[in-house]
Image (cartoon, rainbow, N blue to C red; front, side, top):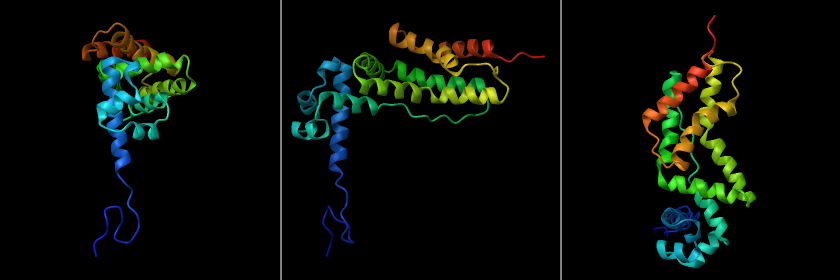
Length: 202
């Protein structure tokens, strides 16, 4: 006798994939609404219309609208995929190009600005902002540690200052000046940083 769709042949139950699928559909719809029309457009009704899901399903996942936006933005947190090559300049350029891709992406830029706006008044979003910052710069921080350990960067370097000098210009240019962050701009930023923090040669 064959097993039913929600059971294993052994009799154990199989997890219903529909909740995860519905959640993904809803988050994709919310992302599109956020980018197209901003924070105010992301409502249960609008997401239901866009995704084809019922509002009851959405309220089950996210009782409050703020919960929906929080999960939406958290789903876009950057992951650290850095695999160092040993060439410090090339590794810094590669890592900052990843950041540039996110800064140049209108969806990510909109969500970043939304987090910053909401963080001023909402502790939940303030924590999310901190995570976004730390996880988004973890690769740069790792390269700084490796560079110091290998004697390729000055021992007195302050990690947060270094992150500011590397990532800050990209964020300022892309998010606030609304100018594209090009590979050439990334390379110039890295070269200025390495020139400033090159160890003194005796």
